[in-house]
Figure 1 (cartoon, rainbow, N blue to C red):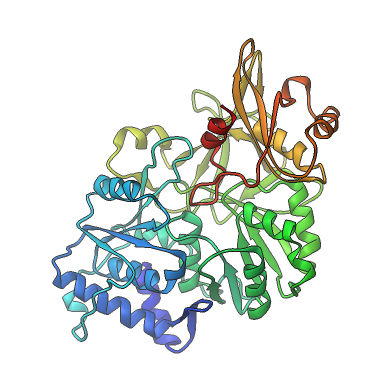
Figure 2 (cartoon, rainbow, N blue to C red):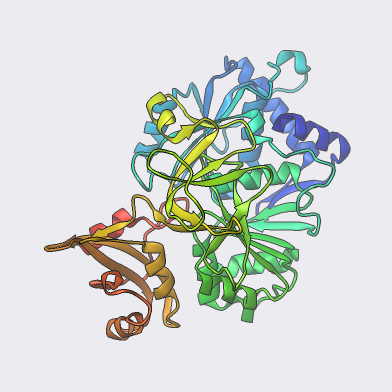
Length: 466
């Protein structure tokens, strides 16, 4: 299976059915999607784009319809799509395009189209052909281009039972150029519900979108969920249609998960854990008060193990490096064999996180390996500190990070969004954290700095603290 092949099937079966809607901008049926992407593919071939050429796609969140056409048009032409958000700095976009050797760039309003002809004008694509290069968010260093084949992107698609059949509409606000955004693009062509989104996320607008379309499935990142709860959208909008609310891209604090259950009274709250490198491997956790901090167990044929420094498997309860195995053809770093060899190991992917498994195989994250604070003789988990801080009712959001300390080397600092006085928070944390985990510095901010994928930028927080 390939994604262009899947689109052809859906267009043939349901040409007039709406696949995707951007509220306020328009909709795209399967028939239109197939016709436009096919015409774009022929035009790209006419412009000299050949099999395996890399084509940059620079689009914004209001351009999801054109982006969907561009992505499938590039793939159908036999080329490799390189999705990039228009929210990136121009210099970063140029660097990524240069790194992958892009031979063309498509932007909104620049989608060539050629009518007529047949598939004989196009290069047939095979499951093993390269299809996508997606750049990581760069939270731990320079962004890397993660290459995926058609077989990887289409893994699990085309089944007799389509995903999310309980819904007529699936709502999300994920940005173009992210792994979560690409997941929603695949859902638009493969899943049962019509996918709906909006040009710009605000808590009120997104809640209104859910209410208007009676969305049964909703996907957010934790930051969006926190903003919606802080704004009290559940008091102004009917969210009773939501039966599944999924959170992805970052850990979901237990208190936030519990509050989401109250705000979305009919929804099952789930947390998804994966990475750009590991997809489509993932763990899924239906929120369980008995396991509030777990990110779940692997699904759909994937696997998780906890590895020691030498790569050997560790027993349940032991903390080590999280490795995931994809059920599909593995991804790789484009043009970087050394980095590929470090991260991709015989079908397994080193996630860059520390964690442990319990006796039932549930995964618990301890921290990003790069975020662990080595304070004196101790190693402090920022995730554990953040969970404790989030338990204070006056805290909207929090992020823990390391700052220099004259005797310990590093110590804990916490940036807080909320109204809680610092001294009150320090007293509150004394019963929840060990002495070496207590923050030596607290900072109150209006909002936490984030990258374009919605993840907290802890490098920026360390600059603020300095």
